[in-house]
Every structure is written in C-alpha cells, then in structure tokens.
Length: 161
Picture 1: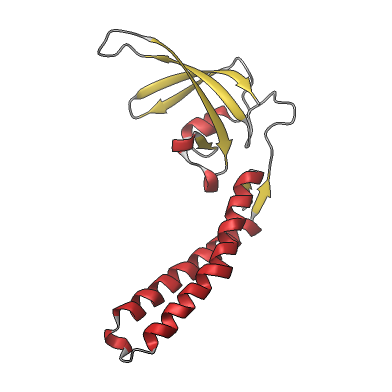
Picture 2: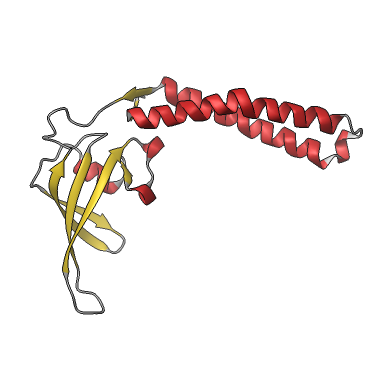
C-alpha cells in the first residue's frame, strides 16, 4: 500500500535513517565492544542495555526503509482549488458559548500530511485523521463537520495554499 508524504516529511525520515545507519550504529557497536571487554556478559547491565538499544535501532531502520520504499511524495493540489496532502488550509470555526458566556470565531492554519509526519502540536494534521479525512477534496468556502468526543465541530475553509 502506497503512503503519501510531503517532500519535507520524506526528507525528515531520510535524515533520521541516515543518522541511525551512519552514527547510531557505530556508537552502539562501540558500546557493545567496550561492555563485552568487561567480562561476564550475563550480569553486565551496560552490555544488555546496548544490545537492547541496538535491536530497537535496527527495527526502526527497517521501519524507515519500508516506509520510504512505500511512499509517494505529493504536493498540495496544484491549483489550490481542493484540499490534498501537503495543502496548507486556513479554517474558521465557531466557538461554543463557554463559561464566560462568549461565543466567537477562531482561525486555525493547518497542513494536511501523511500519517508518518502528523504532528498536531505543530498543526500538521494527518489525512487519515477525522479532520484531515473530512477536508480532503473540499474547496474554499465549503463547510466541514467533524465529530469529536466533545461534540460536532463545524469548520469553514477560508483558504487553501
């Protein structure tokens, strides 16, 4: 199955893979050799720890290689008419009346990404998330309703870049 990713997301994964292969592997190899030189390996915590970290690193390398092999770099919609992976979207949502009795509108700028590079804290929303999936293929001016644990939230698409 093909995964879709932005150019920036693919570059980030490639950098991580390069670091793990060229730097982390060497560091772990040195740690294992140094710990092995201390003698009894069955009670050597540093040796056991380094071997465990080596196994996790090799699993991550395999995962990254598989992900990169099965990804296709995409850009947002070339015409910026519809939301796609890589699109930067400016949304507007109506805030519900809260404790202060005030309701209003809030703008939110997000980037739609593939699942591998999603980071909600940086407003990078996966296309496979409820919000990302609801936005895919939509046009400027359309309203999108997303069901959340706190209730339904309506968003209006103000801009697509």
